[in-house]
Length: 204
Length: 289
Image (tube, rainbow over all chains, first blue to last red):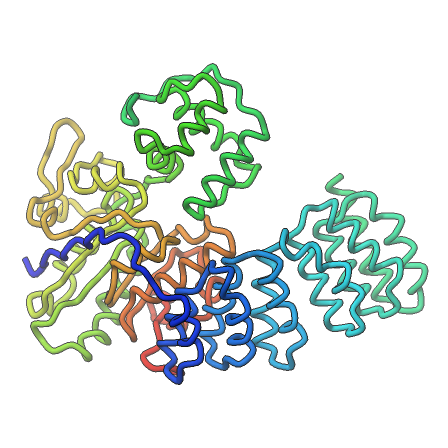
């Protein structure tokens, strides 16, 4: 037979790593070194500032992924605070990385939601609405309804309606109707509201 | 108490809150995510383990679990993993391996070098043995290379069965009779044991895809079959598992997922390769390959 036995991996136990060295390696000119450092710092709360700075400076997609995963593994409010600025990035790939990571951290993202949903930048408000999809239905409904009650831009309202169509509870129905009345001159809003109410009513 | 005891019904009442605590614990330890809509599935396995350990309440069982007394964590993981599979499952990927992937790999490997193939999770061994058989039957250069095949799983009970290599008729349902005759021997009524040569060709190891340290001991694979497991992980665990797998594969190596999975939704680390028989994912050879 052409097959050869592979050596079973030795159970060597966890290798000790030097966090300081890993932080320094985040600045290396070598991509693999930066990748390995980002991977090693995953879940290390003390490294959040360094991971955040590295994510802001990094251009290699795979290292960005590893940095975002490392922050995600920490999973606390500091790591969320480090990810949030990137949802304003002019770089679409970086925005996507930040949003995906934040979506995986609904609990730690919760304290930031009110502020994000009221941000001056309409695009940030729309992206913030995406984060509601991972939250419990009652909370997502409350926050999306809050947006619908005060929001002036139809595109942001449309994003909120879309979230409610997926996660909304019956308490959203009167708020949706009010929104449809307010944007009666923007036909896609009443249309989207009808679809959302039909979906919510079917599930309740 | 033993993990190998036959499960029996438990009289212990399990509340919704208990299930949530157990699921949180399982998630933290293994990355496996069980939503509340899987309540029946969870309850059955939990009740089996409570009965097997003799715990008198969920709280007593949970305390035992947290202290990992008698390796209860592993027994619980074993109870929660699904091991039903069969030989030559997703045969199109095996065909892709010999008609496309290995052609590319051998271009970078001189004759006589080692080709490394990993089946993870391998459950009770059907997949790594299928790879062996398929290579013997379909890879024209099978004798020109050393071929290492590793099968790994989080479930140590499944790994033990894999090493024993005894299967029922159902596992063999997709195999032509000629292959059964060539690679199996009868081992009792409706039981078949895989040929000793193949049994000795596969190395079995325990691994948890989200354990970076454990995964670091598995390196330099040319092809990884990782089918129908990432779909059970949540976003965070999937990302970590994808990065761990990335580190286990040679630059230019391939990963084959299950037909219902796509790596593009799991990680942008790999490039998509469309071949006539399958879509597979390739680790870039260079930074921006």
